[in-house]
Image (tube, rainbow, N blue to C red; front, side, top):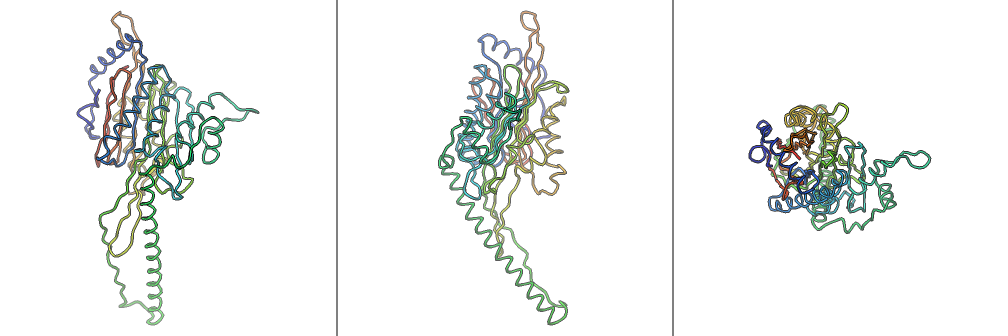
Length: 450
């Protein structure tokens, strides 16, 4: 079904569907699935929160559509959520329009280093890679780490790794049958072009900054000479012209793709993948690989009434800002470090145990992210999140026997200019994709039954 209301609603205007509407959908979906023998399930994906060029809106939506369709194909064969979410991520990583896997941002050295992670809500196992080079689909390595960990301890009682970085991650991947690739395959014309532009801007900024430092030193020498000659600075005035900031020349890129899935058994899983910041320092690891920050998945049990799955999206843009008659500044607005410092994925999962899911997510995004005390010194806090939660419901069927069904609620929220999402259930004929644009924090909500 469509998100509640018409399209994406403002945070203060979110309203859930009527309870009767959700129940009706649940009965119909359960009956249809039983009639044709299909497995039930649901997938929600995102292709980044940030700035999406309107000229490429069709491409962004198409990649979300393909990811949803691939996930549903797997779900209909009875695949479990943790494998389905990896299949969705592979589609997202393979697109040249996303900053994950192929076509990712290049770092300062001109290399592509990727982060990815996945979490299984049933076993609570987690797998992640950081600063990984030479692997076309980083999510495959993260998924393999997770599955290998489920097999238990290694020889001599050693604990299997769940998070590997750099050369060690690459060697482990190859040793476990994942094919490596040439860096030439990873880079695209778009990512190479963006790197060359960013490198020229960075070189220019560093050059002008050096000149500014030298100018400042000369002025300080001049002031000292004046002090030596006259003993004071009375009547001596340096004319510091107030800088005028001109319109910025922004090079924007998407960051981080992700997906959340619930399968026919009610298991949930989440995954995330990213090429990281453009012009980042080699070896930098972002939120996409960090436990509790990039993704989270947890089945019902213990104190959890709901199964929850979360995938976050970092965003950054580097802008070279011309300042009249003076210098150039490179600015980074919003990044995975913000998500790391707030552990946003885990925070959202905890919040979703509340009765009112959309109100809980609203408050979490505001209190735990936008206004987090850990980010108090930041000028802007940009990012996005997709979440789902589900629970088993007992329904009275036409045969008057109680039957188990899944009630799924899914939401997304972002503080960036735009966010691209797609979703699909096994009962849908086609995937639904949306590209939401806003300068304000946004949240969308819908629920249905399986």
